[in-house]
Image 1 (tube, rainbow, N blue to C red):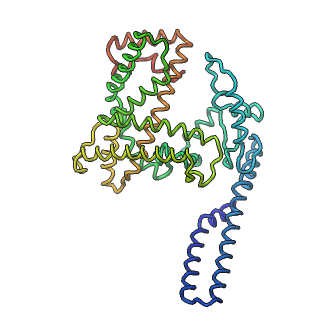
Image 2 (image 1 turned 90 degrees about the horizontal axis):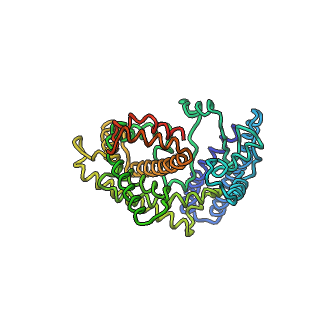
Length: 420
């Protein structure tokens, strides 16, 4: 542990030390241009470069070989096993091979056993090595926990023992450095400024907005069926629906610009999903490949669109003083909360606000649309629950769009989303 910490310190500061030494060498050469001093300075420069290279080399050995072996032995002593570690790549080649083999199989369309399709390596290795399971994502360990009590302990622990996993640098395009990836004091500051936008009372006021979007979707379905359309791709439809709802609730009158951000984020997610299956090579994201150039362009367009929306809202809100009114949508509530916190010495930069917008747009969009699609699929497999849920909605709401008060009386519909 001491060796690892020491090498980490050296790795962190070696560039700074070399830069200082190079500056000193230049000053010596300028002060005395004799050959003797020049040769001495060049020799010392080469020596410092060699030392820096050796420090970096030993640090790589610790990170790519010593630490993984040490961690694996610690877990094996506790009875936790997994596939063997391979230098640099970890178990990623095996993960890719198992996934490719599973995708080649024809999945039963009426089966809800999706675990083997989404995470086939978990199921394969759990049978071989048992649970919990340890495997390697590059040189980083991944521990798979399935015991409910242990999961509860990890999620509810407040002592900081379980830190958030650092995401790949190239995934920052999608969610930035928002609340999802922050830790410690910075997380607490952001949460205090963002949480008012997600207060239950504010969210209940958006029920009518959600009902309007759902009504428009159902009208489109009816028109399609009347014109002879035989099938509806509910996955696609729910993606459009959730994008519309979050754009209206998040941006208010600027929801059309918000929907454009969703479209670009969907393409970003597809690109990041592809690159995440390979080992991250430091510096590769700066190489102007076709995929990287497209990723750069999408990031610039998303941030440009969000900055424009935020600046327009700030201008419309007034002078930015205590009386500023930024609106009652999520963006307006977040800007108002951030303005109030400025008086306490805490301030969100424009980039931080952009990152928070990225986070709640993408996170809310994907999770909600997937939940709706999955629930509808399972209701089609359990039609007795479908009939009970429909009867309850008609009984409570009648022919009127539901509001927050009605939703509280849906005793069957609400648990359906949790059970399924």
